[in-house]
Image 1: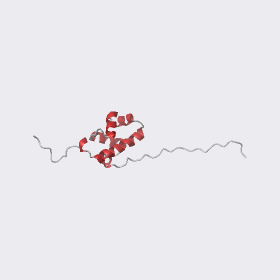
Image 2: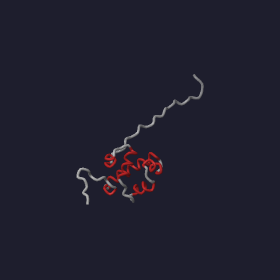
Image 3: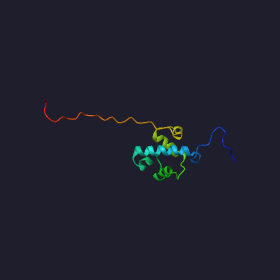
Length: 108
């Protein structure tokens, strides 16, 4: 039996995520859903099936590190920041030009 290298830690698996990290990722998923509008669009952006994303959001699926990376990339955070629960960067609100209301009637 080969021993694992002492210089490189094994990669994280879905079972390595603790519940607070899963909770943080679920919050980011809800944020993505508010931005995208549908779960299909969220799943397409993440590159996972909608059923898998919804199962992770419901808590029936433990998820995996690949999903965590995809969520972090989709919201614009590093993996460590996403697992720690940092908020995604806010977008500047869209500027709307306001025009003055047109007056009815003649000049005085």
